[in-house]
Image (cartoon, rainbow, N blue to C red; front, top):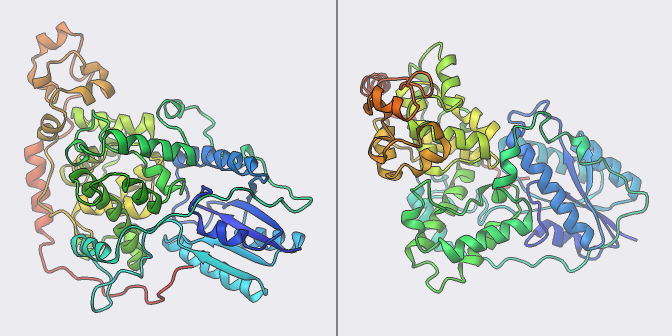
Length: 491
């Protein structure tokens, strides 16, 4: 009787799961296990909002496995020790998992793979989360790409469509005497119920991921190219947390898009595929330049004179109390839903890093803890793009004006009215600059600036000039990192 272990991580689905399919081949018993690792010795332990998502995603996966005659075994602790314990107790001969690409995970998995193979086990790993491995797309000379457009062209040249595999029709039984920890014992949910808004906003799991993306494809994909910029509209797919936790694969996304008769040609489809490619590009960059998780790609920014003693300003930004309505709406949306519209992410990041001169790492840490889709590669790349210090970054002098951005992308103030209700009675033409309404008119609608809603925390013109002066200090030729992974394979 043969027994195998399938180690689930951020691939919490049954369909298009290459490690699961490989583990099912020719075995009598299969042990599906998820190991919740202690945050000790982790550079980026899972954030609070992502823990909420993980709890419900594990429940959904267990339900799916139970419907096929199996169940998910949950354990908590050191992955190598737990895998060895399972192997010894149940006579397993092989272990399968889908690869992860964050620096700590690559190192951990390589160590575990070698240790288990040294034990005499068969260990096989697969790509279950990307269209292309980070080492599969390189510049003609072999170096990794640092600019998106040529990377995107290289992706297209290789062909984006790789047909996904269906879910298994049944699962073999668990080995006798199998036990695991309870989901509640992992303590993923908050003890203080700050997550109540999440339940109104999200459905979690593989079935929910497919349903959400199908609805987006059938209703909003055609207008995605323009609709994605307006935060009051349902113009984006919002499948980023589903992708991060592997409830849906990018191969499935591309395959679902092929239902569009103009696949690859229609503006919305093309624009959406580019966003999938940006996700791939982020993974590519972090794999080849692992220091960029929390250090700038452009090392001139190590000399940037960031602000000092910014604790109070950072807290106001985190709590959505900056006095700039589009900023505050975004930060409150983030707190209440665990998500923020991408256009608004850029605006709030620009205020923090440019007008307030607060290091981008502070914003990245806040997003890491509060986003349900917190992904190390995408989060770090996005913040470095806005700060101007990453690969293919926005120029340092691009500083978003939150008033103009609000007027352009929330012209009727619908987004602000939803998340900053104290301003809901303001006329649309002034809702992004309430200080111009006048105290008496504000009083008529029950708003007193400085009491019910704050004055702007910074002068935009003066802070822009200060930022340009600070960035001018580092205007010397960029030192481009030349080190990149030469292993050619992940764990």
